[in-house]
Length: 264
Image (cartoon, rainbow, N blue to C red; front, side, top):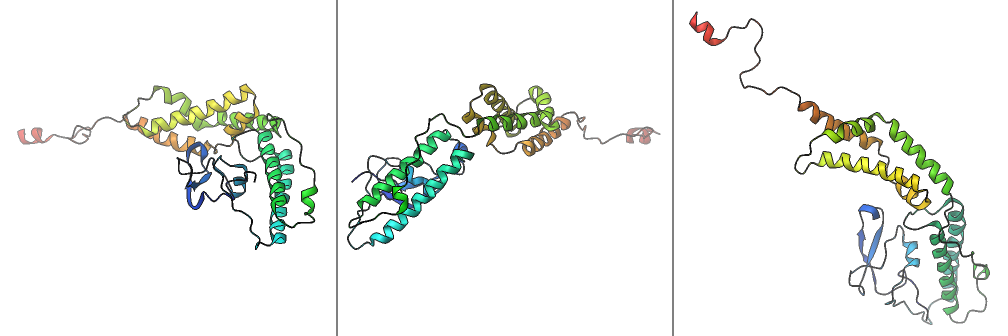
């Protein structure tokens, strides 16, 4: 029997789920009793994507005679229909993820369709398969294919231009280099990270490759972050210019000190 996917593997523990952070924010992975890491071989944004993951230790459920062939065929047919629709949508609009190119995503969907066909063929006593079984598979795509490369670059240039015109960003670029970093200075490090994000966006535009551009523009909008960072650093900078208190209070013009009053 051909290997299937993590979605049908008996080694997968669906009760154990790890939500990821950082560059993989928004993705998650399930537990796996086979792998040393304790988790499946990839991270997904939805359970449907489990169809694309499978390791060498696959151990899938065997179809038994008491299972209803018609019900199984209907389930597989529905999943094939979803993948056909997704392939057409992603070819035109681009895949939502930015881990790999649209071409690789589309080829993964095609592989998923092939596997669903195989699953249908493994069901015993089937005389006629559903319509999607006979539908031609989508063509193999060049791995470098990106559905909307020109639009992505244009969008990135508009975002970068808006950042350059943002007064909070302008303040940070002017004031940040001259500010002194304190120990464990989170505000300073936040400013450094924000300015670095803008630099990476500009570098991706100059590089001209669609996938790095897509990764950068999928970052959250930085305008609010610019403003909050400026407020903290500007407040700290202004506080550093305040005169130090002598502990004797502020003396007004013409005010008589206690020593002078006592002497008189």
